[in-house]
Amino acid sequence: GAVVSQHPSWVICKSGTSVKIECRSLDFQATTMFWYRQFPKQSLMLMATSNEGSKATYEQGVEKDKFLINHASLTLSTLTVTSAHPEDSSFYICSARALAEYQETQYFGPGTRLLVL
Amino acid sequence: AQSVTQLDSQVPVFEEAPVELRCNYSSSVSVYLFWYVQYPNQGLQLLLKYLSGSTLVKGINGFEAEFNKSQTSFHLRKPSVHISDTAEYFCAVSESDTDKLIFGTGTRLQVFP
Image (cartoon, helix red, strand yellow):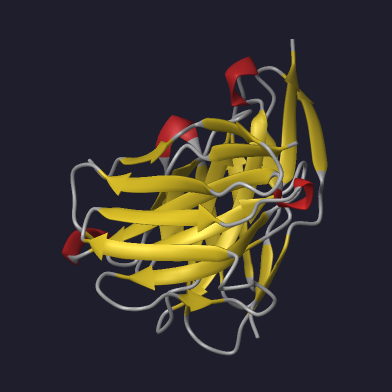
């Protein structure tokens, strides 16, 4: 149990375009989903926390207008990188925290690698 | 504020040798502690977690960790490593009343034949 998927796994786009990344909890309902960013050979940095049906909470320094997060259902959250630029190239990882049994634990998706040319 | 320190950025070890990956944390309140493993170009997989109870926690793939409150440590150990254990290992902490995970900088475990 506790499987989280992300789509796409890889995306290459031109500078100025927008990219949407999906995060799904496949076998559980996720009350809370988290979005992280990881630069090469570095740790994960939390970007934002999203709760189903409410606005996301962004970490300090993360532009909410650039990284749009929607958590429309208990199994799906999306991250849209708007007007992407080369400096947005990174590995984006989502995690989900479930009701009940998995309450204290985050389960991670496989990540999405974004390359902006 | 919470923080997590993984003192060793890289740990080289020969196959079948024991290994310990160190993790220290700072927090003023009760915490939950986690170890995750990341294989190349993949997301994070939960190895084990400490929420409460026994301070010795056993996880997947033969790993275990011991919570030491007085030393604020949560070191990860395995008595005999395999080549397949080569990966990046992240220690993480969350305070019991918050949602957020704070990660350490990671330790690259490299197992040699």
